[in-house]
Image (cartoon, rainbow, N blue to C red; front, top):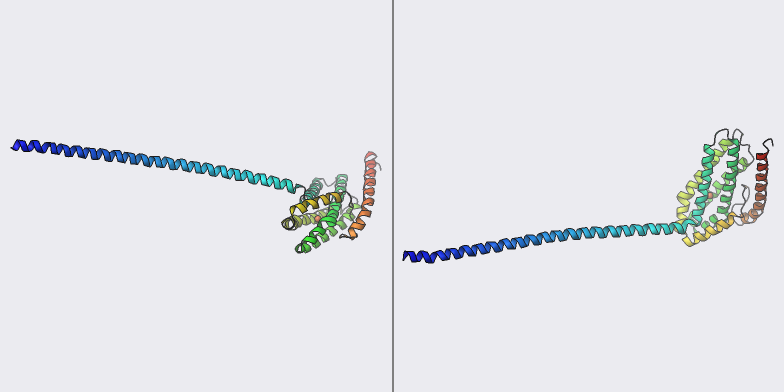
Length: 270
Ligand SMILES: [Fe+2]
């Protein structure tokens, strides 16, 4: 009887053990599946992050390229406008100033030639600004009126000094000092124009109009006086009427002076 009880109890234990084993196995399998799913999720998350980073990089790169292209286009568009032209004049004159400063104290002939080039470049530059640029700015920007009036006065002072330099011997005691004062005045003028007036103009006047003004400045370059005339009118209509007449005289005198200089170079005793 006792034996019979044992035999009936043993299979029951075995069944329980097997059931427990199955449960444990299932739990392990489930855990394994869960862990695999977690790994998969992690991998998937990493992949997504990498893809997002790559996309972001691509977008940034495309934006940067677009910005560069826009800047390039804008540069091309503003290359020929009034402000670009006037700035280019400023750079040309600054080159002459630097060459003058580097020339030795005894380089009178070279300095004389450099000053002649400065006189022509600065006179032409001042005239085209007074004839085309300043009147347009005054007409369209009432708040730039004081900037323009100050610029006209600065031009006037520079013209007075240029006029004196025109007839001065480069070997004269005060020649270098006078050129230095003139260069300081021009540099101050350029700094104010490029730092204050031009940015205001660019903000206020439409780019198409600035391009058109650039064209007008280029046309004016061919006809304006090439020598300083501090006593002549510097605003329209006075400068329009007087400028045309003196421009012809200036060019004739400049051509004549160059011819004399060439002969002097060929015959040093003159
Ligand atoms: Fe100017």
